[in-house]
Image (cartoon, rainbow, N blue to C red):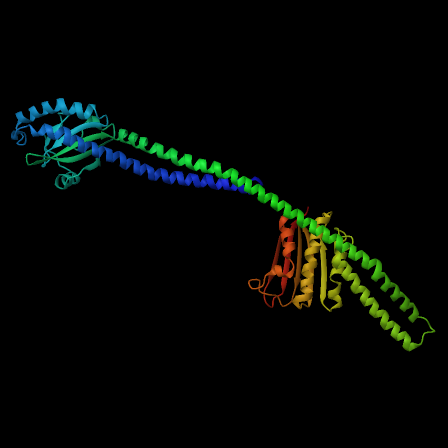
Length: 433
């Protein structure tokens, strides 16, 4: 399956299928053209034989031949057999039989004497050629009355053309072996077939290495892009960690110490009541500020970001929602030994989704759900805010663009589902690495 994902393999498979379709279609067209050309050669051969062999033989015969006088027909048959059988049949291996018809269907000459001297019913196409000229072409069927019994074992075609002699219009007909015509068709078709296959195969051989080189370049560029993206994320994490550490060791500790001092001072009996109330108010304010700073620290860089620490980190993430009067909840289940990288990615997407919900949605409830199902890790952040129209607003403008690329690069999926007045749902699914 992994091999089939390669663009080069996909191109080669598509090219092979395309080549097969082209070869089959062009072969069918070429076969029709080749057959037409082979038949055209038979037509031309028949016309040449009619003009150069048969007509000279008929010009020297007497009028008695056309009156079907037995003596004249026999003399013509004897003379024609010596000439036409040698020139037409011997020197043209495709030709099998010869017929010369009078216009009324009388078979004046046939190289098989058992067929000559009889009147047959001419076909409609034979009559048409006698009247209009040109050449005709037809397969020889078993029902053909002028066919000899010994012809029935092999397929034949007949080509006929008119001859005008002494005011008489005769029909000269040559029977050809269909096998020889088909052999000639293959002789015509074969070069075109190899030209088609060779050109397509050559094109495939030339294009495939080029595509492979381009694919390698794109793959390397993608790997470099992923490396830069990971480096950027790592640098961002390092900077977040430094800022969080500085805040925790500096401002947070100072505020915590001040809060403890004010609380202790407020509990001193020597402090007047009005001053004690002021100190309590200041202490409460500092505690709120301390809680907000800790939520900010968790947002900047959560501590203990692994499978066991994900739920506490998410609870710290939604702490500002609780302070703002928004009902927020976290549900984590099915996590068991998942990698820190997958857990960190879940947290980053949840962080961006919760931040968007608090800043833009006007929601009254936010629910964060993380589940480990099979070999997949799923995250869903749902709010009941104002929502938006994805066809008008780009979901990526809410800060998910970089995360979308990161999730896609590791084979995951992330979707933003929303509609005006129906809240927003952010879903992500990645492999449990």
